[in-house]
Amino acid sequence: MHTTMVPVSMLVQCTANNFASASLLVVYKPEEHKSAEHYQKLYSAFSFIETEEPLTLLEKEKASYLLGENLTLTCYCPLSGVTTPYLTFHFHTLEDAYTYTRLYPNPAIDLPRLIKEDAKLLAEGKLVAFPTETVYGLGGDATNEEAVRGIFAAKERPFFDPLIVHIAELSQLDGLVAEVSDQAKALMEQFWPGPLTLVMKKHPQVADIVTAGSETVAVRMPANPLALALIKASGKPIAAPSANRFGYTSPTTAEHVREQLSGRISAILDGGACTVGIESTVLALHTPIPTILRPGKIGCEELKPLLGEVAMAKQAGPTDTKMESPGLLESHYAPTTPLYLVDDVRQYQGCEDVGVLLSEDIGVSFKGPVAYISEDKDNEKAAMRLYWAIRKLDSMGLRFMVCSLLPEQGIGVAINNRLRKAATKKAQPSC
Ligand code: TXA
Ligand code: MG
Image (cartoon, rainbow, N blue to C red; front, side, top):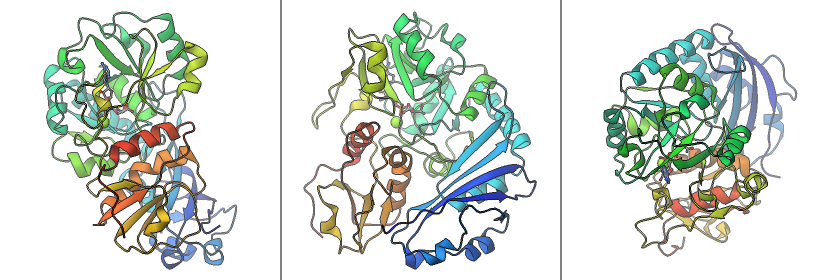
């Protein structure tokens, strides 16, 4: 094993002592590896007082490439509409976690205040980006056509691509959908709040701009507590596509949103890194057989026991322009640096200007930068890190990046779907 994980329980002492517990996972590269001392110096606000395994493990073990750090912070912050008073935030790096504690030293006070302000903005027809468990959404009041038009403008999204409407309570379905079938009820009961979007016959009140003129509307109840509290406080159903410019990789941190939409929207509610990491499953219920239009964390295996038969929509080919769901268009989620899907990444071992995305340790030393989306073919972890890693490599001025498909199991189906869409179809270059 080249990579090493170091789980550490720490008590985080930020200025007001409000983040009660934290845990850290570090995977590092020898030449870049940092000692416990280094971390303590750099992040003096963190005090490493309780460790399951001593931080000095970082010194002892030999490791190869940088994955990043994976940190969670938990704080006490009761929010209206949220069942647990404890919120846990996830971060890809210790630095991100540290920055968060500096920005919001008193989460129990800061977050309810921000939610109130942002909900007011939404109710006034302004645009607010917010975290969901899948990716960050760019929200606007779904009942305000001007606000919805603003979403399309900020994203430079074509009007033919309809939006998902986000709700915090089932009562918000009134005026959104024509009826809730028994099938829909069963799905909502089992999977909401969660990463499942249901496409149903729309209520006549829903504006055409939301649904791109379609007789159906896509609805979901996100599982992120900040999202639920924000939607509830706004008192509106919130239309929200992923908070990226059209065609680019979806954002999984507030910083990603800032990079692409800053200056175009009124606020960004920061909730750390998204835990699912790829967009929700989109399931059409108005078709004779329930049909997955976009694969996501909730797959056929989970849906079949409730629905019996489940179909998978045909994915677009390079020349298709009109699909059942415009999100099925071939080219999507694409970084600026070309991404090639290859059978074996080892052939790029010697290329300094080629980035490699890996989902397991293959025991090879690469000259170019390597981003591990997981260390051991863990598809769920890979989904959480995928867009973060793609953006990291995309920012490095590389000639191109390479990746192999993951095992088609569980969320792996959805990851491969996104990788195929993000990848260039041109012939694979050599080193
Ligand atoms: O996880 C998610 O779903 C994220 C977060 C923010 O909730 N949202 C998201 O939205 O990915 P967006 O707009 O990037 O993707 C929505 C997808 C598109 O593929 C769109 O074509 C499809 O849902 N969609 C929306 N309304 C539809 C409808 N009425 N019929 C068929 N497809 C629809
Ligand atoms: Mg999107």
